[in-house]
Image (cartoon, rainbow, N blue to C red; front, side, top):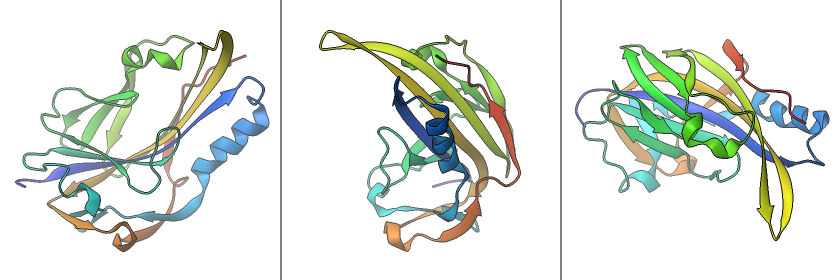
Length: 205
């Protein structure tokens, strides 16, 4: 690996509610999952990026400019191994999940919603748009929701999606070290400290 890599860590919480379960109490319980003070893996420590050993033969970090680590709860997530995205050429927009990201300054990335390629979220329809600038050591909490109807066995079922993300531009890594998950460094971290809150949720019925 040559040069330094930017490291962005994302904690995601995603859930699907049925119409009958989409209550204010259930939504509050879901949002509280992202507010918990708990021990987390410290992936970046003194310029070293620590990753699960499962990824040692999976990813090529040569020429890598950006590593995105996605952790947390949600449909399709793996609670044992962090989801990893590796990018080169970050001066142009890169897609991941619901988002696009682009480096606009040495210490800043522009984060955008990529609704056009994720229209399964349903209504309300949204345009692709910039969410925020993400700077080093800054934490952004971002919320989004949506509603969709799908047909299964001839019956229509309404689903409500809730998304709650914490984005943090952690810093830069000069090297990568692979370890078993239980041997990765840990840190006590409160996700509610010093974050900017961006709420793009809409009233759904």
